[in-house]
Image 1 (tube, helix red, strand yellow):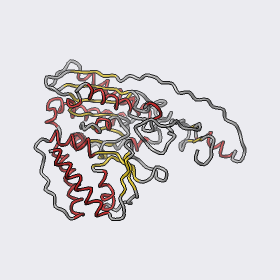
Image 2: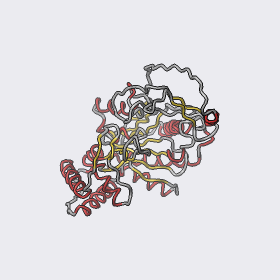
Image 3: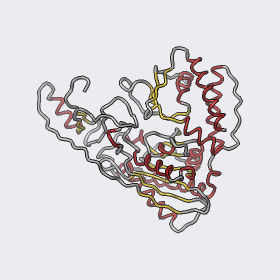
Image 4: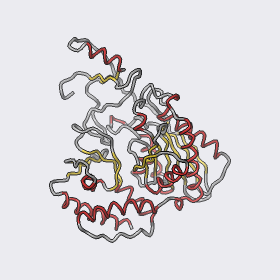
Length: 392
C-alpha cells in the first residue's frame, strides 16, 4: 500500500494447499478499533502464484467485492460443581480456518473425551470445560489484535460476575498435534505438566504463556494458565487446507490427554494448594538476582507469605508478550516474558541482539533502552522491586 500498490496477492510457500492469513491495515496490534485494510488482499496457492510470476511484466484486471457482516459466535461451557469454592478451567476453541484438524478440532475432541471421563464423578473443586468462539478472529471494528477475542470476552464476564478470583487454573489445548509439545504457561501450573510429561517420556519445550492462544486472556488477568501447543511444528499446515486428520500424531495426542487428566485430578482435589508456587518463586528470583548482580545492588528477596495473591498480582502486572524491534523492519514471533522492561538486559547477558526498542503488543507501549544499559537496567529493576513490595 505504501509503495503505491492497488492490491496484494500472496502465494503460499508450500505446494498443493490454500491458506488463510489475516491482514491488518495498520502497523500495530492495538486492542482498539482501527481503519480497515485500504486495498484488497488475496491469498492464493503456490501453483497459481508461480503462474503469475511467469507473467511478470504483463497486466490483468482483478475484480473484487468485500463485505463486512457482524455475526454472533457462541462459547460453549459445561460445568460440574465442587464442594469447595473454586473451579478449574480446561479449554479449547471450535472456530477454525479451512479444515482445522489440528487447530483446534483435536482440542474439541479432547474436551469431549474429558467430559465422558468425568461424567458422574465428584471432586472437591469444580470443573468447567469451555470451548471458545472467536479465537482465530472476531475482534470488532478491525482491531489489529484480532485473535483470542472470545476468551477475552469470557474473562471479562467472569470478572463482571465476581467469579474471576474463583478460577484455580486454566489448561488450554490448541494445535498440540506434533512433537515437541510446547508447555507454555505460568511456572506454578507449567511445573505440574513438566513433571507429568517427563514421567511419560514425552519431549517438550518450556516457555511462558503464548499470546497466540486463549490462555493468554487469563494470564493478563493474573490467573495461572497454560497452553499445550505445537505451533512451530505445524507451520506447514497452519491455517491451510492441509490441516487434516492424517497430519495428526494421534499417539502423541493420547499421551497428552492422559497427562492433562493427571494434572487435572491433582487440581480438582487440592485446588490452589496443588499449584507449584515454589517453581514460580525460583523462576522469578533467579531473574531478579541476575539483573541485580549486573547493576551492582543486593536486594533482599523473601518468599511471599501469601503466594496465591502475590503471584497473581505479579503475573497480572509483570508478564507480557513483547515484540523486539520495529514492526516495519523486523519479523518474528511475539515472546512472553517476565519483566519486559528488563528484557534488553537479559538479551545482552545471553549474547543476543539488543534492539533500539521493544514493544508490548496490544498496549503498544514502547520500551526504549538508550545508550546506558546499566543505568536503564538499574532504574527498571528498582521500579520492579518496589512493585513486588506492594504485592506482598
